[in-house]
Structure formats: structure tokens, C-alpha cells
Length: 254
Image 1 (cartoon, rainbow, N blue to C red):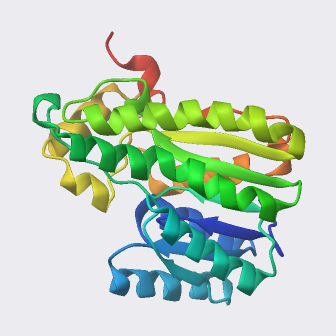
Image 2: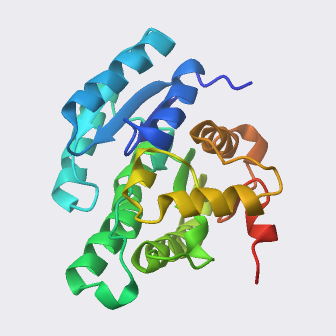
């Protein structure tokens, strides 16, 4: 459906879950891929092998914490060196956060979650936009927690709300320069990350009950949304959040 041959895409958190699904979609569409990881080197190497099998090309693998300016600068330095200063798409997908009731959240919990889930987009965009040379797409991966309340999700939900607000503000700054900034927002996706939720089973059960489509969103569904947002079909879509949830946000009580 999409031909991204010759396009260059940097996907943070691109070695597993939703990020890997996005990278795989782009690889199959012919794009040159750079993926970022933080800790799991073995998992990252496995992802590289999977992407090479999908496209015949070896992706760039970049280690770094997207909440740290110095790590971001180092990764973009490598991208400029390897790709000659060109970048078409930035997918800000890497995420983390503390899953606790609000009464148990500390200042450290708060800053860690906000930095990696929201500030990262600001810092990544600052480096990416000059490389896009007046024609590019920035897509941030959000979640329904930005607009709906879930147990143990206070810090992460607030960070995702900040992320979506930042998307709108960056859109205003970059749209006239040929850069589209948007977000995709997913409901519950049963990835490795969901295993860290103390109420995982309840979340899955409730999501299946309330989702009109009667199935969970899969990583590939989110990847499809990202592909659409990076295509020429959305040239005049700026500052929006594309919700991918099987209708869950429409059906949720309240």
C-alpha cells in the first residue's frame, strides 16, 4: 500500500512492541530504518535481524536514553554521518513511566515519566527538523490515558496529555516549514510493556468488553496508523491525534 523507497525514518523504541511493528512496516515499504533502544541489547540485535529479513537492508541501531539531551545529540550525530544529513520521518515512540496510584508517586517518578514520554519529543524534534529540509513528518505515539483516567496511570496519563499538547504547539511552529506534526493514540495493546501493569488482566478484560470491534488493538494496527500519517494522503493534517482503539473511547462509560 505504501512505497517509501529511499525515505529515511528514525523510530525511537523501535526494537520491540509497537515500535518494532512500525519499523517492520517501514522496512517492508522500502525505507531506510534507524531504531533506538536503551537497555536490552540482545532484543535490539534480534530486532535488527528481523528488519533485515523483512527488507534485505540492515537498519541502523542506536543506543540512547531519549530523555537525555546528550544521548539524543549523539544519536543524531550518527544519523547525520551515516545518512548525509537527510531525514524524512521521525517516530517518537519510546516510552516508560511509573505505574502507581497517585498517592504513591514521588517527584522522581513524575520527572522520569514526563521527561521520557513528553520532553523527548521536544528534544528529538529540535534535531530532526533541520535534517528534514522543509519536507518531513513527525509522529508521536500516545495513548487513551491522555484523555481518559485508568488505575495506576496518573503519571503516564499526564505525560501523554502533555505529549499531545506539545504536538499541537510544534505543529504551529513547523507547519509553514513543510513539517507535519501529529500523534497516533492507541487503546490497550497487549505488548511486553503491558506486563508491567499490576492490573493487566483487568485492563484486557474491560477493554474487550467495552470495545465495539470486540478485539484488542494490535501493534500492527498502530503501525498502519503511523504509515497513513506519513503518507501523501495526510499532507494537510497538522497537529491532530489519530485515535486507534476499535471504538473504545466512544463506548467507555462516562
